[in-house]
Length: 368
Image 1 (cartoon, helix red, strand yellow):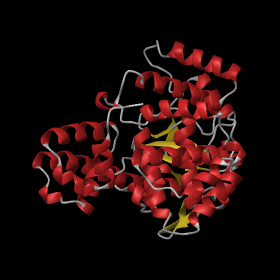
Image 2 (cartoon, rainbow, N blue to C red; image 1 turned 135 degrees about the horizontal axis):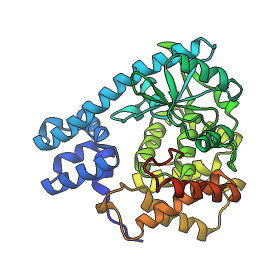
Image 3 (cartoon, one colour; image 1 turned 135 degrees about the vertical axis):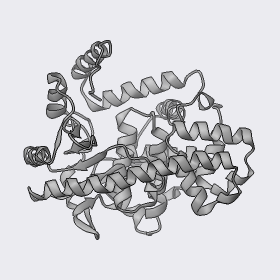
Image 4 (cartoon, rainbow, N blue to C red; image 1 turned 60 degrees about the vertical axis):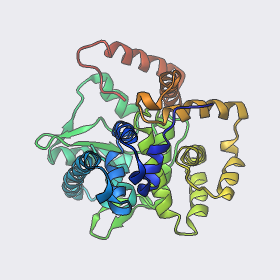
């Protein structure tokens, strides 16, 4: 299987010094692909920290600098927003347990370098959802979606409340009580995640998942949801987390053990497979072999080959230069697969029919 190359983009991410040898044509393609993948600011941050920034073409530095400025502004706004969320939750005696980009940024992890963050995700105990929602409403966050079906969809079956938006600042907040929908086949225990969360030294009201859980949540989100428009960015997040945490020799054994406890062996297996094949990341052979031997990862060779054909297309930038004739079909099939993993067949049929009907309206449904 020969697919359009993204080697220049991967080199820019992993070897910033390679940027100095790019031709004008290569720069043009890199900027287009990186912008589409939401990775332009990350490449710029890498070039400033490890590359020959002053030797890069002026036009390229302008593109990278503009993206980095936007990312930094988002980080500044995020830090303010997280403190406000923590202040609101303090009233009900709960910390703000951050997920994804907000967690990477507030914890100062390498995965936050040049990472765009458009909203904030938090994890709370399901039994405290009513208290949390009331506290957030008092702080100015209100539900963005008034559709009765969407409200029922989120509150009855999903792992999160309908998205909340702040009335004054316009910021978006996703309140999760689990990392998988209640109807999903995989059911990791959110209580385990919350009990292992770690407080920030700068503010004990703010917490992030422990390293193994952070990696596993990232893997589960990427390989279970089905929306892969920014799939490469998710893979880059995983690669950055693995590089940072693997400096601890106990990390890999702990990751395998935690994946088994949380029933996330399969998403972890897929994450490590594609981080290796697309980003050339080094994964210990012992880890790969241990996952392949796990009963939950047992898969027929033909099925893995099919998944490879789909994911190796869908995880590339959503740009014509990185696509072939099967890319759109691959994305669509993985979108359907994501929904299939999230809900039983009868419910899936009703839900997709509802989405199809709503898509023809002037104001389409916001259901994910």
